[in-house]
Structure formats: C-alpha cells, structure tokens
Image (cartoon, rainbow, N blue to C red; front, side, top):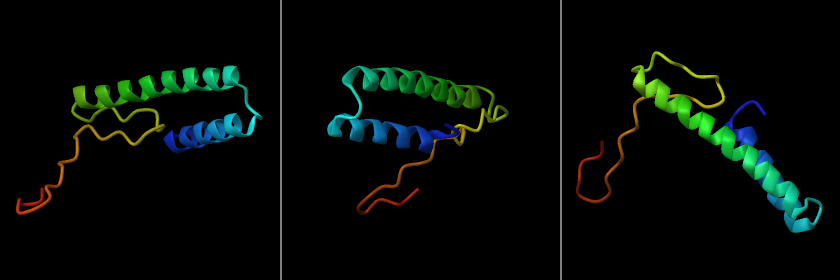
Length: 80
C-alpha cells in the first residue's frame, strides 16, 4: 500500500469479500483497525504540514497541502 488510493482499494475489496463470503467479519475488522491507524497517521501528516506552514511534506502517502481549499459558493454568491 503506497498511497491513499491503495488503501481505498483494499477497503473496497475487503467489503466485497465480506459480501461474497470470502472474507470473514473478523478479517474485515482487522483490516478496518489497520486502516484506521493509517488514517490517523495521515491526519497527523496534514496537521504537521499546517503547523510548519508547509515545510513538512509528509511521507508521500497523501498529498499534503497545509492550506485548506476555499469552498465554492452556490447561487448568487461569488465563487472563491
């Protein structure tokens, strides 16, 4: 697993396996626990990038962007 897309793929295949019966609930729980830890690590990378004003680039697992993207407004408001 090299990046966030790989993690999503693993989780998707695990869910498919549970539905088809080829992956047990216990196996799926183990995968979910590991995925949760990986997700927490990714969140820490984002927090570190923000805290260091972008000087920290992370492990490459996710694209670390310290600045949150502005949200686009819908309707008569100007888009950001």
